[in-house]
Length: 241
Image (cartoon, rainbow, N blue to C red; front, side, top):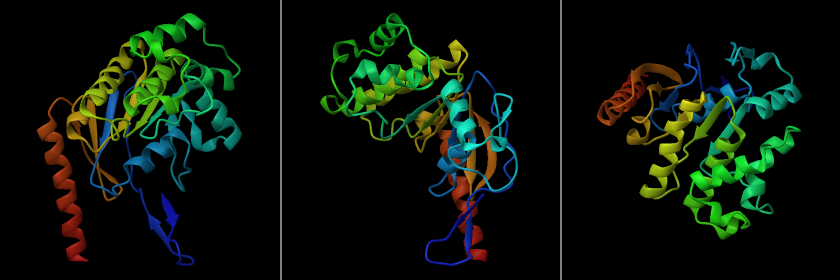
């Protein structure tokens, strides 16, 4: 995938290339790699929020690159949930209204008991009528996870979901991300934290816009070693050029 280089006419920077990757359904997959390796760009391309310049991307049996922007948005509303580092909550809505919002935008209705159950399971039921600016960062991220739990999307994209959280709040979020596949949800998570990545079923390691390796989850040291190897390979390439 190419992006224009700011200030340089007709010059582009290749962010992703030669990607050949299959994400197993009903599993938690983590994407890791050195800074600038293309982790978030890959996630956004798969989600249809960035358009790749070549190749094909199939999500849940649908070629998302062949869809118009309007149909891509409809596809996401029907099938996809998001958890981002910045929470992406609507400041003017209450916690329970934020949780129900994705279904409302898709023309559906989440039953009240399901919203209440999601809030209770994430430990935020007491904040149901509060607005996001009345909550801590950890509580806001729990609202984002509760939104996913209540709306039951088929796939969840999480971009650095614990990056702005303290250790305890981050563990709560990771516990729920790890539990989502039990309800049939596929989770794809970008993270810089090897301990978070080790919670995944598999870990995709990127380097210089390519998939360098795919390893099983469970071992944070193996994740760290794989990322360091990708970084070393990149630095060696820079020195050679």
